[in-house]
Length: 117
Length: 109
Image (tube, rainbow over all chains, first blue to last red; front, side, top):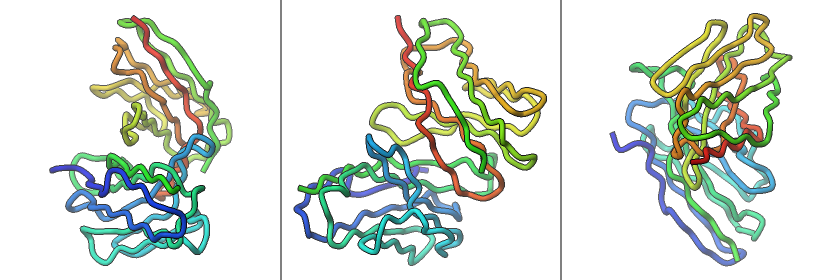
């Protein structure tokens, strides 16, 4: 398996623009997570899905952020409008209950480095 | 989930064992102790987890005290590639994993 795939790897945009980050979880995994990492706040959980259903979005900073999971193999995190303080690395992770993996062993993607000017 | 406390940084000589402590004095009976690490510019990577018993895998060993209020992650023969931030997390059966500041381990030649 290719692991968790995220795109784009780097994104530079101007304040006010819409940004869409994409994630493809590991095939067969039924939970997907979005995290944000900054120097100031560390690694924060934004939202997670179980079986494509959002379970906890309490970490989403504000209404400018939205996440969807239309099917088991794809998720998006959208920021509209973007602001400079949204600059961070955004990670997607997935986990599943099958195979030898522990129930909560999360597999992380390489991240998307977002810069909002 | 219980809060965990880790030293902000540690050094270790290459080839020696690295022992990373974690305090989780408020851990509840159904919470596991998980360890992840994050090598610079990469996503976090799972290392090991345990509930009560000590655990060992190809990456590390996890020693959990009998009262479960603290644990130690042991990298038996640290290499330069083990330089990373190590996170200790107390987690029950949900998926709500909260990362703290972790311990920045520097392995020196």
